[in-house]
Image 1 (spheres, rainbow, N blue to C red):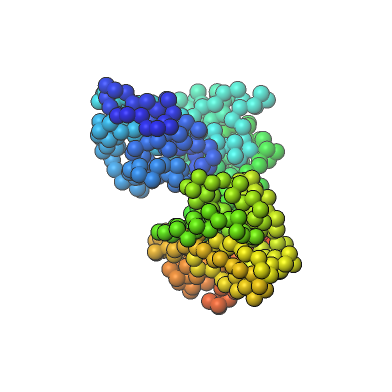
Image 2 (image 1 turned 60 degrees about the vertical axis):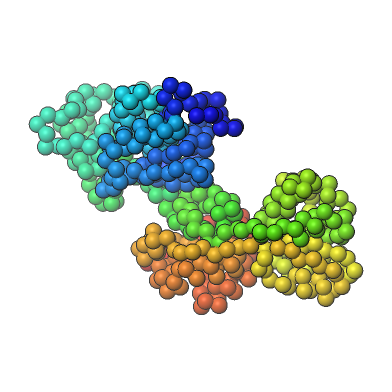
Length: 525
């Protein structure tokens, strides 16, 4: 198999086998903890064979044409038995493909990566381990518990807690564990927590030894609780802790109250639906995740380019005829620059043409391409753009207005009334989503969605074209909209915006969501 253009040098394919398998650790859940090498492999792989992932957003790194194969591997969900997984990755590699075997956490830490590697070695398949950040390290770190500390512990022991307590003999040396002065981290031990506690105390561990539980570490569902090894089983029941949870035992747990940081994030535990197009969603989703929320991306619109750019390109070739270019979105700027590039033009084509941006995000998109907007309104709606342009005097001036195919005509109509010559040309079209994923329906019915965001009227219209209004109303989810026009679209459906910022920008929307929930706003259950 030939190397792909731009492929990193380490992603070579062994000629004697034709293919190669990378056993890649996906990390514990926070997508930011995927390694750089892991990301590069996902970007180049022909096939991705993946387990249940805490964040399926990692699959977005894959090439669109890459084959994706889900093999399950979570409690109660085994899409394929381990033997079939082994056979699958061997078969895919034998066809000369680069295979990314993506596993949660680290593939060699209770992940059966060693068994899969043995199968590959026996089959003569070239392979590599790509270590991932294990939950045993990341979960405690996010809970403010360093596993080693000069004052408290100089070693760490990782232990499986998934052992039948009824066995005649344990594989663990409880005496050694109890007397080691090491930090103990148990994986998959919630079912056996009472037995683990009893065995450690019986072997000599002081009953008052600090211990903690960490549930879904590093994710938006992260939470932790601490106590002593003796009372930890009762604490687990009282606080409803189940798997996946880590059990951490040792004096380092004393540092939790002092060093806790992740659990202070204001939106931790909140689930927010982002309805923007996939092309636009990242700026909103990333900000929400940074505050601790789970951002459920449900793009109800997609961006479709026109089949024919001839009118658009003709305007670009004659930009010197225009007095103003009005950029109505970051999407418009992106498409504008794609067409300039296709026509072998650059920012110099805008020389002599003043540029207006409808808001700061659009102005930033222009700035990223070396263009400083001549005018940005104080309020980011068409009416404010109109007011500002009228103040500049537009009578007799020619204005190029590239925008979405379906948009309000307030701006071009009023500019024409003021004597301007306005050429409105479609740069893209927004298309509605086709259906509502069953998972979103289930989560709405279960009351698991805390907030739904709307960044335009079209997101409101398209969302409720496929999601019943009554389902959302009963769910108790709060509705957050970017501004009054979007709020009016909600009102037309007999719905009220619970959250609306004073400034009509994505950062302001996120700040308003944060303020609502930290001030005591809670979804109705």
